[in-house]
Image (cartoon, rainbow, N blue to C red; front, side, top):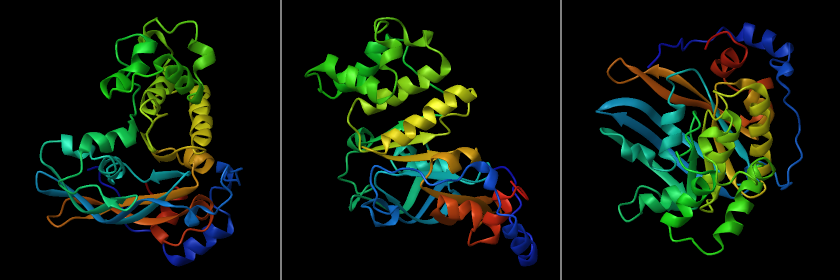
Amino acid sequence: MDPTPSTAADSTAMESSRDRTPLGALGVAERTQADATPVEERDVVFDCQQVGVRYSGTRALRDVDLKIHSNAVTALIGPSGCGKSTFLRCLNRMNDLIPGAAVDGQIFYHGEELYQPQVDAIEVRKRIGMVFQKPNPFPKSIYDNIAFGPRVLGMKKDLDERIEQTLRRAALWDEVKDRLKEGALGLSGGQQQRLCIARALAVEPDVILMDEPCSALDPISTSAIEDLMLSLTNDYTVVIVTHNMQQAARVADMTAFFSVDQGETGTRCGVLIEVDRTERIFTNPAHERTEAYVTGRFG
């Protein structure tokens, strides 16, 4: 893991920083929600209890307690190497695919423990879709990219209608409706990322996980993806990993700050420091380490 300072400035400096309303320039603002219910009062989609991950026996993440609520964007922020992406992959069991990875603790998804032996990991990944940092469309047509998942899962009824609706949800239909048989690799980077989001939506998931979905995109494409994230919360729960604190401030309802501590064998180990409403994380965090990170004193 990348070395990251783990001590914050003293409490006096912290109070002084708060007087400046830290990160007010990031654009934290109230956003219109389709669901007016406070986020904390919505259904719990994921209830993570003492979640940790080891890679080949080395602890990479420990003791994460976190609830993720429905129809909201939850952002995971923190310095490089703090376990954000590792934790994200726990939510749809993608760490199962990494040799030597072992997950401990419990993750309840709508009340059902995800890591019970009888739970089908393929079904988990159908319900909990993933969009990666770099757009990864298949070397197929735009149409076949969206149709791939439904065909594999036997969801072939009204396929043309499904593809149109999915592309509309991904705010891509008007741009590609006359090019559906053309190769997806001919799309721009931003279009490819929206296509990958559409591909995830095509199998009717409940949750969309996004691992730094805008890190390789230009500002215009980033803005389009952020608008899409906000619109998706009408129907989906969204969890994103981002290094861009401005992005978290713009799109997230809840923000979880991860950092790094010394692990059992002296190696660096990711820990969850704080989770709260986004505006509180950026303007009045409860922990000094959060304050130090969001004001740029470390990270």
